[in-house]
Length: 130
Image (cartoon, rainbow, N blue to C red):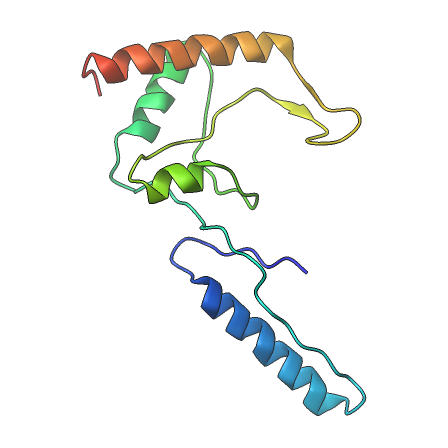
């Protein structure tokens, strides 16, 4: 099974939670036998609340009439690796569907819009207009 963690939660804590559920199920049903083991873990990531990057991205997008909203996501990305190294990041991309499936797609007009917003973001960040 897969058990994802959220920011601030340890892999050991998640593993202990699973073990507690299995123990409870074993108590309820003597025929139920199960064990778990942590095979690997990846860190969860949350952009620091006070970091200027999300707000700057919102402003760059708004300047191009694109609305973005900060939200949490349940999937894992390399942003967590960057975050662990001390490099804050945000996820921003075009709309579409079928992520990692046979019919994955994005909207070309949104790819171009993302390109423009990201170029604006890089320029603003590098020139100190945060």
